[in-house]
Each structure stands twice: as structure tokens, then as C-alpha cells.
Image 1 (cartoon, rainbow, N blue to C red):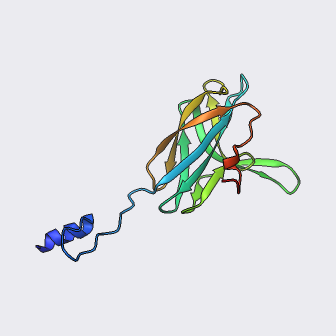
Image 2: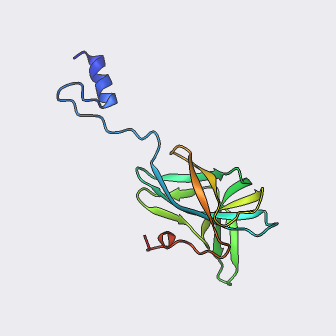
Image 3: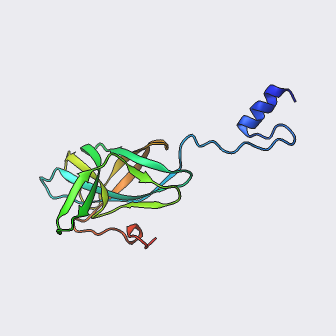
Length: 162
């Protein structure tokens, strides 16, 4: 087999040349699994909402960089933490690390996606699209289900409950 064809076969992993092992897959983008995407309903006049979901980087570590949705002017990553003095604080974060093979839950009292400037209230039983942007994986649009105002996280989103 001509050298150029051997090189092409090795790069493409087609196994066109006898005895030449197939090339390992090339990760052009990491595989991300998203589950349990939900938001609480909002009260009329409230222009902010919150999205929770679970993310899993299957092939390689990745990071969630940002989000967008047509239902809000802005969708940004935040984290809520309880201080030693018992005060809940919230701050924006630039990204959220997604270790390979680990599930990262965005859940109440932790990481979440803040929706700022809602065009209209989020109504229980409705849904809306949310696009997630990663450092390696291609952008992914998921459907967020709106749950009742006092809804708790689904059991599958709770630590240790998968």
C-alpha cells in the first residue's frame, strides 16, 4: 500500500491496510448527558427564575461555560452557599467544571442557572428551551420542565439518589 494511503488509513481508523491497528477515536467534542432539567414556576411580576439540572461528561472532562434561553434576557451560572453565620449568599461563577464520568447536579442551595429578565412568568406544567455551552462539547439545547412554585428537586437530582 502506498505510504500516503497507509497514513490516511491510520488517521481515519478505517483499517484499510493489513496489520495496521485502527486509530483511536478523536474527540472533536466531549459527550455530555443532561437530565432532570427543571425550573420552579414564578409568581406574576417576578422577572427572575432558576433552572436546575444534572450534567455528566462521558468522554473527557469539560466545563459548562454559559447558557441562553429565549424566555429570559440573560441566563447565567450562579452558586448559593450558606455562610458560617447562617446567611445564604449567591454569586455568579464563570464556569462549572464537569469531571469525566461524574454527575454534577445543579440543585437548590447549590449551583444553578439564574434566568434574569423573564419575558413572562414561568407557569407550572409548561416548558422552555435552554441552550448550554461547553468548553469542549458542542452547544446542546434541552427542554426545561416548569414545576410548581414550591417544588423540590427530583429524587434523581439529590446527591446519592441516582
